[in-house]
Image (cartoon, rainbow, N blue to C red; front, side):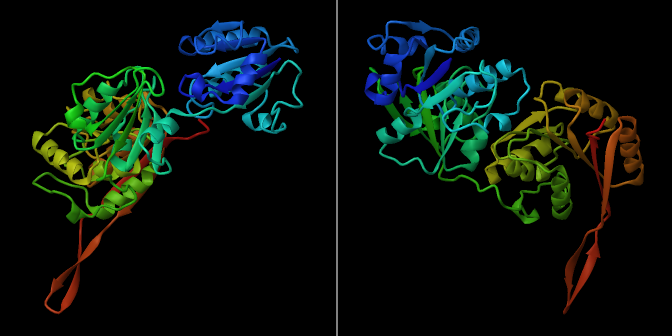
Length: 428
């Protein structure tokens, strides 16, 4: 069986490539969605409308029919959040029985990456189409070389990190995240000033382009078939180190700069990591972690109202709108948070044991860093980590800063801080 996945562009015949049209004409059967079926009805008499699950099942059922030629018409381009990726992964994995890795698949020829495998494995080819971001860029008379391209369609993902740390972010909408919901999230987080471009029903009847500040577009209705470009001229560059003097301090305690940097380095935060800051205080560590997790969210849990106000001020000051503040006391405030990858515990208010139990219930492979000042606290941390079979690393940091005394600089030492890192051994 031969499968050719054709990118249909935005959904009209005007943007279907000649190669794609020829493939559809010559196919024994064409599988596509309701939105595209009417447009190609004149090209092939055997068109079946079905969803992704039914499409994969159909391909699996006919995988042994060597002479069968199937075209799958996908909206947009086959390389940008396309059904093509799902088909290739699920179909090949099921038919190969999980016996070959993705690297094995790529060892075939360019035309047939499955060469050398069992004859039941189909030959899958891709014919590219125009992506929605290409059409939208053309409508706006812009290039897209400086756009960050993402999809929120059907995903539990926030636009806030991208709108905070990239000048221009293009997003596919759909499911929970329609245009109105996305704009509301921007406004509620403090990003009402960003410029939003909305493209509805691109290249189709009823096409509409809307441009305006997020806060001025809030409350308006938009078509479900829409894409968005967000432009933030005040975007934040995440590759920076925050100094103590950069923060609004207030009266709430704040982790000192050197200790903050050592603690965050120990967590090894990746851009896509979901991060918790338990006992966030005034946001010293929170905001610095947000810059590291610049394509995800940081959940800052704090129970003191005065500290929360300072935290809000610092979030705004640094443009770290990927920080979501959770007012409450741990561990109860952690119950509804998404599964974390990395966690900093700056304060546990005597509930460290219960907090750790909740964390490891959420994700047994999470990486945790806890700070301690007193010997009694370090003892409790080590006992708790041992009980939970966590592999432990400890850094004792004694920081001294210079102070001008007349013509001399004296080094003034601060209290030592213990930075304790815990995670499950990969072998256990």
